[in-house]
Amino acid sequence: MSEIYRASTTAPVNIAVIKYWGKRDPKLNLPTNSSLSVTLSQNDLRTHTTASCSPSYPSEDTLLLNGSPQDVSGARTQACFRELRALRKELEDKDGSLPKLSSYPLKIVSENNFPTAAGLASSAAGFAALVRAIANLYELPASPTDLSRIARQGSGSACRSLFGGYVGWEQGTAQDGSDSVAFQVAPASHWPNMRAIILVVSAAKKGVSSTTGMQTTVATSSLFSARANETVPRRMKEMQEAVQNKDFESFAKTTMVDSNSFHATCLDTYPPIFYLNDVSRAAIKVVEAINAAAGKIIAAYTFDAGPNAVIYYLEENEKDVAGLFKVALGEKEGWAVQRGEAVQANSAALDKV
Ligand code: DP6
Image 1 (tube, rainbow, N blue to C red):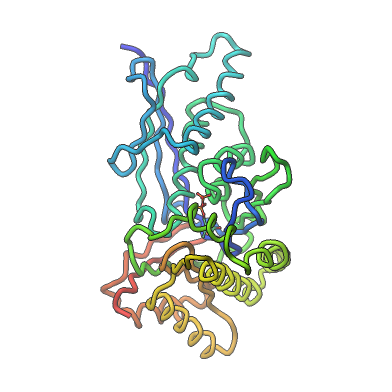
Image 2 (cartoon, rainbow, N blue to C red):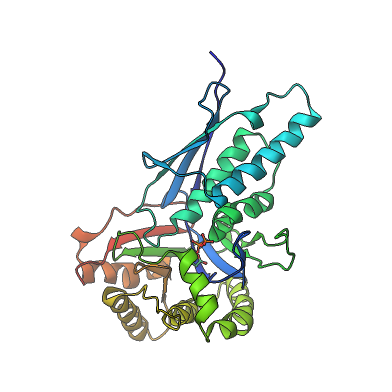
């Protein structure tokens, strides 16, 4: 019996507050603007991945996601496998006594504890976990920055899930993508009372994939260029300052206007892309009502490429924000509330609004 080598890891979902939308190089997943996100706690929405390899495995690499075999022949997965194998090969060439793992077929087994491809950033957690699990298996001395450069090629937003807390993704200028990497703006402990409630409007797979949607936006939207070249660079600065200063009102305002701007460019795409639905818009109204009642901004909504809302708020306003959503929606519809040590996510279903 030949030996089986194995390593496991988990990677959490991240939810952008300044959105990535547009590629300047679709092959390398190089974005047209920088972005910024909050990584949710490991105990909440996450992908668990085990990577193994063995000379005894059948010759093809395989990937099982939530029990179903996935196609690994796509350019993105192949890019991740290729880069990680090349780094392992360098180690093996330097130290002849190392087992030749880079030449063995890989078997990847991943489980998401949330709906896949429903606009809940599943590809972000998925590729981050895949890349880190293989890096662990190969015992690579790679930093989170190095891994973010590889994970980006799997799915752009995945590069941000390699770091915890408040995370930026620098768009970079190099043609080979070497400087298009994630960086930590601040650890979760810097602003530990940040909370996110996830309102699952629909767990169905999204209609237009991010990849297709953003390419069509870049090609057809007349709003897009102002967003990528003027609006987002300004907001990146504002958002980093808001995080540094723990200024929730500024963080929240910028989060909401950036979500609105992203969805406006989607609507301005031809043919138009509609990610928000009536329930999403109802969630926006509830946030507006919460803020009006408080007399200041205590809650912020944001939406990715789907109708599900993520609401950011501070722990001290739990009752006025998460509590109100729960009352509005009915406790029985709520998912179990999970608790993590840092940034925490709650989830509730919004179907009944
Ligand atoms: C709206 O990272 O899924 O969630 O690079 O094509 O895989 P690909 O796209 P993906 O796009 C995420 C878009 C977004 C905004 C964000 O997370 O920044």
